[in-house]
Structures are given as C-alpha cells and as structure tokens.
Image 1 (cartoon, rainbow, N blue to C red):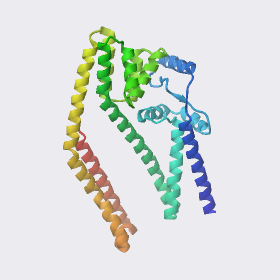
Image 2 (tube, rainbow, N blue to C red; image 1 turned 30 degrees about the vertical axis):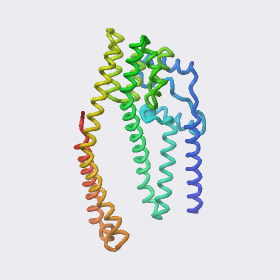
Image 3 (cartoon, rainbow, N blue to C red; image 1 turned 60 degrees about the vertical axis):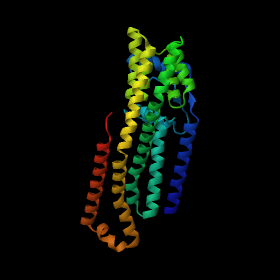
Image 4 (cartoon, one colour; image 1 turned 60 degrees about the horizontal axis):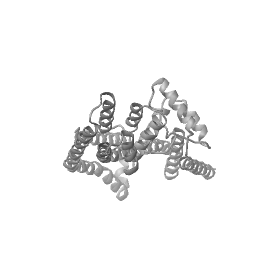
Length: 320
C-alpha cells in the first residue's frame, strides 16, 4: 500500500509539473480589446499595478487554481513578483509549482527517513527554495537592467540630439539593447501605443523594476514633459551619474569580498564537521541527537550561526 501510495503521489507530481510547464510555455497574448478594457478599468481606479499590455491569458488544467487564487489579496503581489523575476507564470501556475515541489520534497524525505514526520518537516523547505529562486531571479534581473541602463539613456539622448522624438528613442532602445532592458522599454512603448499616458507607462515600469536609477530616469522624463527643457543633456548627465554609481558599487563589492567569503566559509565549517563526524563515528554524535538537551544545544548553535550570517550580510550590505 505504501508503494502504491507513493506511486500515485509521484504520478500526480509529474502530471502537475508537466501541466505547469505547458501552461508557462503555451502562454498567448491577450486580445487588444481585452487589454484596452483592463487599461480603462485600471485608469478609473487610478491603479497602475495591474495595467500591462503584456499580461497573458491562459486556459487549461491549472485554470481552476488560477481562478481560486485570483480572488485573494496576495494574487496581485504574486503577479508583480513574477513580472519582476521575468517569469511567464500566472499566480495559479506559481501555486501549482509550489504544490508539486512540496509533494516532491515530502516524498523524497519520507522515503529516505522512513517516517512521515520528517517528510512533513521538509515541506517548508520547498517553499523556501522556490522563494529563494524567485528572489535570486529578481535581483539578477534588476542588476542586469541597471548595468544596461546607462547605454539605454545615452542611446535615447543621441536619438533626441538627432532630431527624433522621445517615442522613437524608446523604440530604438527596445530594438537595439539586449534583455531585460529591451523587454521593459518594449512594454513602455506598447503601453503608450494603446493609449496609456506617459506617466502611467513609466510608473508601471518602475513597479516592475524597483530601482532608484529607473525612478531617476522616469522623473527626469516626466519633469521634461511638464516644464520642458533640453532632455538630451539631462539624460546624458543622468547616464554619467549612473555610471559613476555603478563603478562605486563594484569597488565596494570588491572591498567587501574578503570578509563575506571568510564569513561564509567559517559559517559552513560546523556543518561539514558535523557531517564528517556523523559518517566516521555515529555513536559519538548520538548523544547530541538522542537527548533533549543535545537537540536543544544543536538548535541553539544553528540559530547563532544564522544570526551571525545575517549580521555579516548586514555589515557588508552598504548603501552607495
């Protein structure tokens, strides 16, 4: 019965993963009239977060989960997180991936340990693993966008000096630069093309790319729209400022590499020592795992290591 149960669970997990992959790869663009309708509804409430012409519509086996999640308060936050990470996933697909990964972690931990309690304890690890992956994608995407932003600003400034308009400059950036800058500027151009105001289009981009550099560029363009001025010179100055800030960031990162790596190595040493002793002399470590005081001391040690790593990260995470 146990083997049959795990077989059914494995089949369910495989089916759910395949369906989620098909949903992600088979996304189709929403129709233009639906896009304009969403935009009009959002403008009536002045909520820019849900206005995006690149939002996709999916139908399939994950659709019921998507409909169930859509009514919750955190569905909008999930959709925004997927946009920031550059993942073509609806909130329902994201929840389905969580369910599948939790089932996989539970099955593997239960098979290895032989007890359901250990499998249940490993279920939160699947949630943390996916959250870590999404946050890693978000940080990488924002960092890549910030690195490409000076080139995009200089290209826009050159287009303006050549006599082109702002929209033509945005289109040139979307056509010439690599991802993710081209995708974000394409979103801005398409939003403006369907009738969205310039300030709302840039506000939507600032929501998708939460970066001070993006806020600076958007503010400069919107101020120029209101009061006028030489936008090409303003953009050239902003590009120079951003390049100097990125250079300072790289210098700070290089100076803090030594303490960060040393902290990571020192923090990981207890785990490797614990694993080595467990393999070489299991009876020596049984006192620590087999008694209540030993387990309490082990939890305290893990907590102090985690606190030390957080403090080290805080000390090396400098504002610039």
